[in-house]
Image (tube, rainbow, N blue to C red; front, side, top):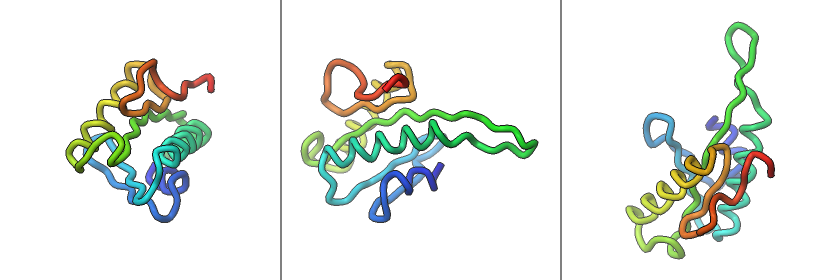
Length: 114
């Protein structure tokens, strides 16, 4: 998963595990649109790259992503995390396997049918 996220985000991104199944991708100097496009690439990369199992089988994976931008959505790191987390839960409530953007009303940006 880490390799897929780095591939979607680019060399300047900082990809880290927060705990459990939560990961964070920081895009220093990125615009809100760049964050959205990176997230879209990550969703598509995960959808199209099944996990190879030790027995030779594969497992399809999905990812739900919450996008937030500083200073647009949050003035500091703690607020940025909360905004991204709220957007993540919006993506999950919307059916998972999609991107939601902090502060956006009307549901997720991307869905499995996109």
